[in-house]
Amino acid sequence: MANLISVTVFGNLDSSLRPFGLFMKKGATTKLSIIQQAAPIFNQQGYAGTSIKDVMQATGLQKGGIYNHFESKEHLAIESFNYSVREVRRHYAATLSAKESAQQQLLAFIDNFTNAFENPPIPGGCPLLNAAIESDDELPIIRVQVRRAMKNWHYWIARIIKGGISKGELNQATDPKAAATLFIACLEGGLMLSKLHDDLTYLQQSATHLHHYIKFDLSP
Image (cartoon, rainbow, N blue to C red; front, side, top):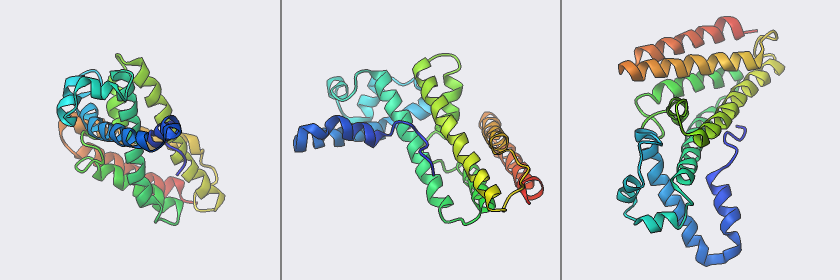
């Protein structure tokens, strides 16, 4: 899969800490541990609704111990969002890599997304949807990250479709970008309704529509 997030957690840590040798490797481990523990909290409580005290309670660290690794709460929020997206990416990539055809990859993507409603890779559900809804009203810094991640998410699906077209597995008349938009709109929209009503039916109906779309519209 293409790089889903433009700034990876490990990339940031490696580039900033490498010059300081073995001593700073412990700092990098601590920083990653904070991110791993903070990410589910931000994803469940929201980026505005999560306080540094919440992170302190989860990590067992004092405020100074957290700010020793992050410039601000906003910096930690961005790192946590990127980590969450990367974990979701890892979850999907592991499943899709075993599928040979574009149709199989798209179907696996839909099934994974639907199953994640009850068993999300990150507690709290889809980090993209959660952050996108919250950033509509505030948090412009997070909004930039969400747009970037969604753009890469869209690119990934479009690339699968484009590859299927080039191999003769999908309809040659298909617009990959338009098809990818349909996938994201159906899945994220179905997820939003299912979360709102606490009822998986809405997401399942969206998934069923996409299954038919693949079978009857995307097939060559």
